[in-house]
Amino acid sequence: MLTLYHFWSSTCSRKVRLVLAEKGIDWVSNHIDIVTKLENLEPEYIKLNPNGVVPTIDHDGKIVIESNIIIEYLDDTFPQVPLKPEDTYQRALMRLWLEVAELQIHKNVNIVSYNKRHVPRMDKLFSKDEQREILMRFPDPVKRITMLKRLDDGVSEVDELFAIQRLNDVMGKIEKTLDDNEWLAGDEFSLADIAVAPFIERFEANKMDALINWDKRPRTADWWQRIQSRDSYKIAYAFQNPDT
Image 1 (cartoon, helix red, strand yellow):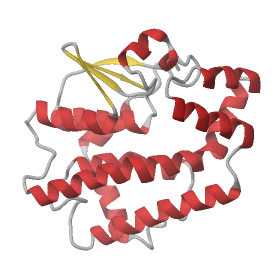
Image 2: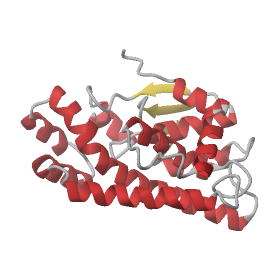
Image 3: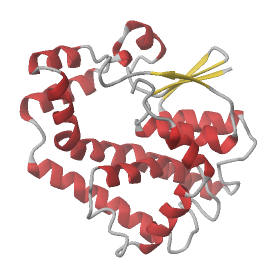
Image 4: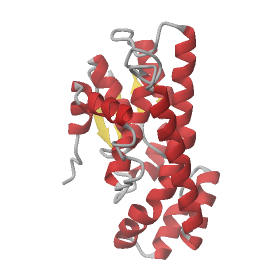
């Protein structure tokens, strides 16, 4: 049995649900409310995922964390509908895109989202003192310190602009890659596309118009439309908050 611990709108959770849908894997949902109930910080969940984040999978008692590791694990363990290129060079390119998705896109979209979405949402739910208490419960000391500093100082306009520029660099790289390839790691849909796709939706949700100027990036626009037309995308994004 495979259980997915996830949050409905988490980009990394959507990444894993895309793989599960592509492969037609049966799974059991364990929805972890990371916003209002803070279930990711409960001791029971921390035992599963010491980082206190989603997603996590439990596959017959084997616990796997970190979305990029999870999607490779799923592809290795369920070989039907392979999502890694056969060519070893293209497979290396795929893994580079997984790294770009995590270290460049995820990191910088969180910076841009902080003032736009995080602050209004948390201020509505919790006082500043309560937010500080919540952050002190984060098990990862690096994330804890980073978020405490943001709580005190916010994200500056300079930091936000720098993050947007880094995301713009990535979007330019996607457009250039698609000059010669149908997909990000060659001519087959792969984990590279799955790792990046949820963040494009996040750009749209945050109304980051400079990044989603499809007149400027027609190949990326076509790639994005093809991803959204896949059954796996529709299935992965059909999951909504079960508590509403």
